[in-house]
Image 1: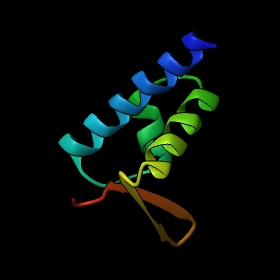
Image 2: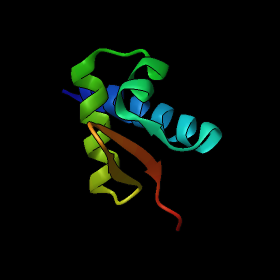
Image 3: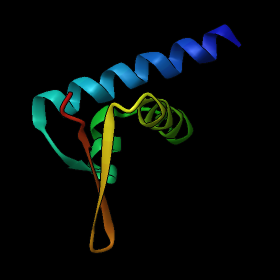
Image 4: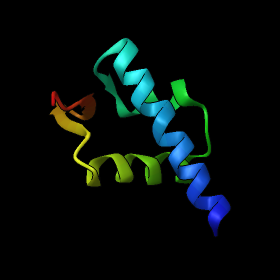
Length: 70
């Protein structure tokens, strides 16, 4: 179980860094950018959302993700 938590945290860090460097992205583009298994990607997105680090913005049929300014 610890391994899974580590993987989620590591992926959350990659997502955070990608958003920090490249700015707002669609979920699809961000997922491709990070390049991890889909389930792990969404667990990490959930972690960041729960910690109030990211914002979701619906744009037509896609959803964009960005860092919350803190």
